[in-house]
Length: 332
Ligand SMILES: Cc1cc2nc3c(=O)[nH]c(=O)nc-3n(C[C@H](O)[C@H](O)[C@H](O)COP(=O)(O)O)c2cc1C
Image (tube, rainbow, N blue to C red; front, side, top):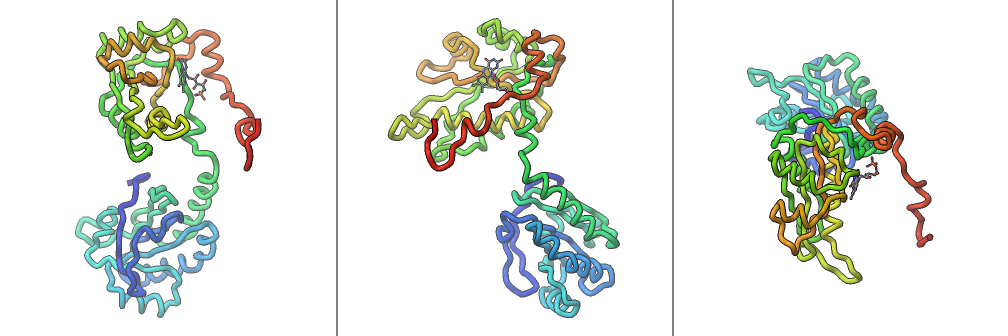
């Protein structure tokens, strides 16, 4: 469940109005499941969350309690105990089931889910003990809130690594990476990217033989993904705006992020003989073989040339931001 996308839901709130999950888009959401309104534990939990609601809101979070109680019962609960958190009624426990917040015999398992601005579950508590719980959720949110404002850690840690292992990378892993690539945005949703995944040893050797000496480090790679396309598979707009290369680039970027999360290396290269590789893979001449993405598990940097070893272990090099960014007007 952790890190999974929350399903969309519509439930009735204690006020009687319908509440769709989209209402919380762009905010953090604390979704807590409790068994029964007005019982001592559920009252204390709701009061604790109410007491901290202002602090949660400072961190852009909403708190929503969910129980199988009818809306009228929840409304009485909210008014009787002066609660300020929103309550949602889940009479047939559909949402509780979707979150795995049910006991074996069908009762509610007191559980809390901390969902981020993108709708992803980032922390969860099951079999919650009410004492100190609201404060613990707030403390966890504080850490998330701060880290989510910094650079995305997957982007920050991705590198075009060259120290590769010969260890197997499964077709399932490769398909997951391609699935990530295939979720990239594209002009008019043209999805102009095409892939040939290569894991057959003979084809791999032939493709590696069509690379210059500088790409010797691809030797151990157990897989390569060839990315190809052609201009008329995508938007061709005025002022030379052919979008197929752009869209394939975004797809490869997604692929690399997915690989990074999976602890794998996905290193795109331009250094290969395109005509030869297209011939090997049977890619027609009117298509552009844009890049080969070298796929592997991390290997031993000691096997790299000195220059590559230094790059592999050294800090990442980038121009100063001011060199690539200007505000409001072109700047040379
Ligand atoms: C389109 C493209 C082609 C590349 N071609 C090669 C290549 O042929 N050989 C190689 O060793 N690295 C290649 N790279 C890797 C780049 O050198 C690397 O991304 C760059 O130095 C920045 O390093 P970083 O990705 O670790 O931040 C290529 C990268 C891209 C995006």
